[in-house]
Length: 121
Image (cartoon, rainbow, N blue to C red; front, side, top):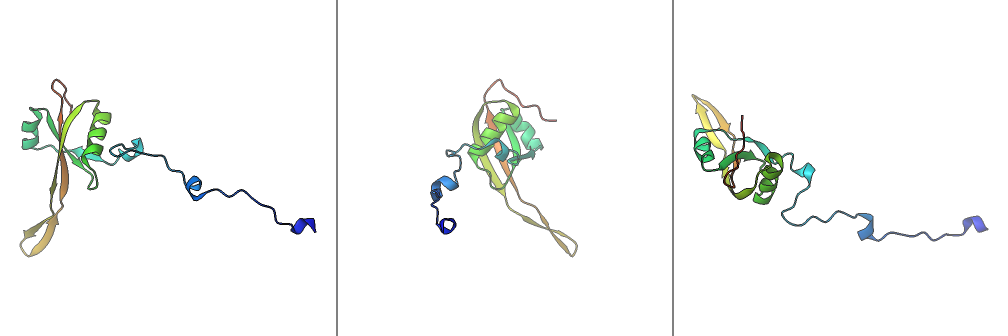
């Protein structure tokens, strides 16, 4: 009865079965950078800040400073010296009896090194 004989197979360890690439804190993959920067936030206040090498971007809700810095450096080819984050909350808006909501936004004020500019259309 050789065909009923149990053969041993090599089982993989649990750690080897699901090997994930190791990513250090603050580093992100290229495919993760796609949704971080939503659009440049163009206002009068942002235009004044752009004179001092500070540009304003609307970013994803879960984005942090390291991710925003890496995304701006890769997309625009500049050196980012500082990032400040601001979250505005959802606001209630009324038009007569109608009640609506103005959506909240998360903005990143990115400062780039002197002599560099970002062309925003």
